[in-house]
Image (cartoon, rainbow, N blue to C red; front, side):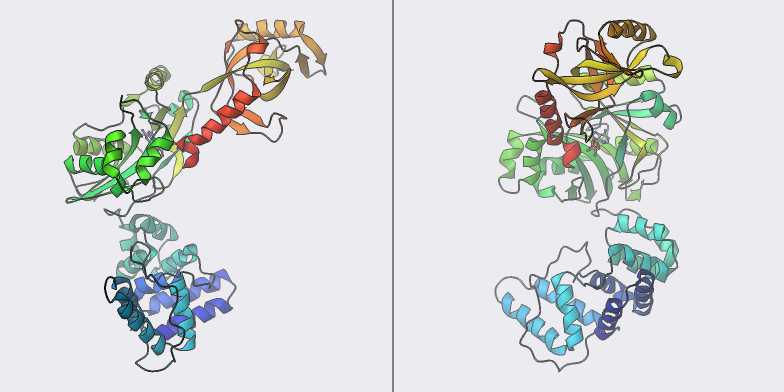
Length: 518
Ligand code: AMP
């Protein structure tokens, strides 16, 4: 049994120490010294919580009763404090107030002033000893003589430092590296990097990649064990109660315990996708859920399987996880998918996704493991480019292969009678088009500083871009990211080009979609 006085003593020493390494050593020494079955409690208390973070119980009080004289009863142990907190949290219903007060009063009476101070801090949710989660994580590693990376990974799977500390204590480094996802402990979702070019994607994935439709909905992670089902969002909020239709679908599937990753899209009565804000109404609804389920059905597209038959697939290659997903679902509720080995096939699939009204595609490395919370080159997202019509207002002289041409075009949108720069591009034209454009722009030249030629704003081009960004340099305040010329629009006059107001509206609209909100 570890005395709570020792915990309070540790708290005082941590307060008196400013060095991170010294704090870490103090915490590690304490974790080594406490009884094995108290390690979890010690860690919860250290991060200022009465219960481990994965434990949904709450105390429902803010501090100990103030007017209680100290003294009386045996000294408090960590386990005594844990048991008192459990009783307080469990007290509910008639007579609960009395039970709660009695337990808290007893706790206060048995505590010394120092202990009371730390009990109050734990109850209040903050220990104020300068000990972060990261520091506790490192101390757990130090105490168990394990890698910090292994502890961090185990924390991802167990969802809780207290559980990690207990595991480290019970089984050391070996147990930590064997930690695996568990049903009803949600994992951070794996994320994707932006790509614009299928050639680059194929190179990064070794010549072959799996493309999937990129659905414009919301991420869901679905867990099942026996008849129990849990559903979490991208930010790990539990939305099980709001999505009874997804729960019902999950109950039809085979292979539990399983964990699946996917995207839900809200549909209107005619089956057309609804905007993200509408979908969020479904996620937030907790009363009258059934009515909204009928009004706004969801389409479900699974794309990953992190556990099947209770076995973790986190480290299995994507191709194997997809095979498992096919087994679980029997081929239903899957993301549309194709394996491609060349740019033409990739572009054809992308065109199909965009034509079907989706955001673009995801490209996934067939050999890659699932990296919870990771964003890297194993998963790319390639969104359909949007286009605006810009006027060329200037051009820079080319260099290297483009010497002799005006090849870097300054793009502008209409701003009243004037034009406002929003980007530059040297992409999208063929050599013949560069040569012809150079002649055309020279004929429109107004000024030439030897590098940049300013021209009369007459040539309209349709410009593809991936994103509109805020720009500190352009007076317009906006810039097109990854701009490239899609077409020369000789059918359009400069007065028909996109306006700055329209571009601002497009910029705002980007925020209405999930990519930003998440
Ligand atoms: P973004 O939010 O733009 O970073 O794109 C990543 C998000 O796209 C994910 O978090 C999912 O919510 C969503 N998504 C849609 N379809 C897929 C898919 N097939 N694979 C992975 N993520 C997808």
